[in-house]
Image 1 (cartoon, rainbow, N blue to C red):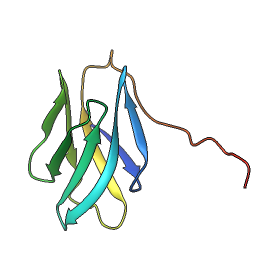
Image 2 (cartoon, helix red, strand yellow; image 1 turned 90 degrees about the vertical axis):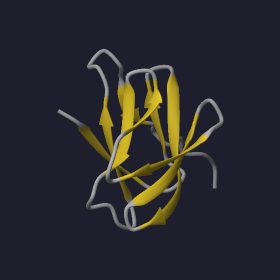
Image 3 (spheres, rainbow, N blue to C red; image 1 turned 180 degrees about the vertical axis):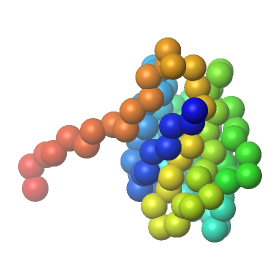
Image 4 (tube, rainbow, N blue to C red; image 1 turned 180 degrees about the horizontal axis):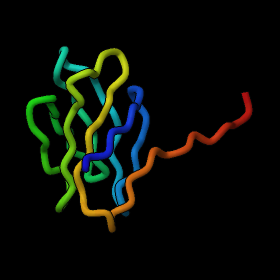
Length: 89
């Protein structure tokens, strides 16, 4: 079963020792993410893309203003949204 996480632009999702960040919304069914390796990857609602070994990411077909990322990976790889640290204003 796939994991679906809602994210906003700029938010980071940790994937094992790596991470991805929501970079841009490119259209109704496509977006770009940035990886911890420094690359930008275009993802769509039509197909999952391998961003790290055994880790596939795509876009939920219902994505709109906020992105709903779809992940497929072995259960042994932790996937979680990074908590934002609150700093002084």
